[in-house]
Length: 142
Image (cartoon, rainbow, N blue to C red):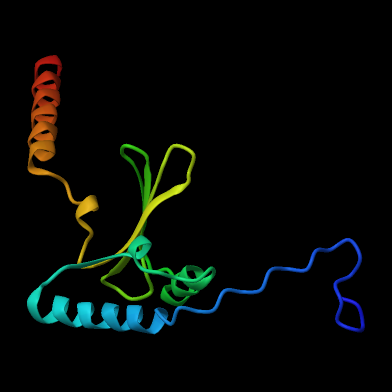
């Protein structure tokens, strides 16, 4: 900017900011109520951030306000997914990416552990079989 408030030569004036939607406070209240329901009733809750109208920059402000907690996991199952505990235990940010690392979905999940991180019974059975095979092979070669 020049002294008279005009854009400096060589820089384009930025587009005006879109007005805020006012959805951040209601979103945080929804998270608060979901945490209360989780503590009192064990009820899980999912918020699809892509289904909520947000002005440019509002999602970033929400993520900044939620912050990061102690747990951070990255999965590689049919694309990449990041699972991040926010600074509020029980509030998780889950982001799914395509092969180009473009965001395909972003969710807030209120629960003890997001379902995407839990092992499925069939996978546990298959793992047990592999471990038993390994142990029986080790016993015959020892």
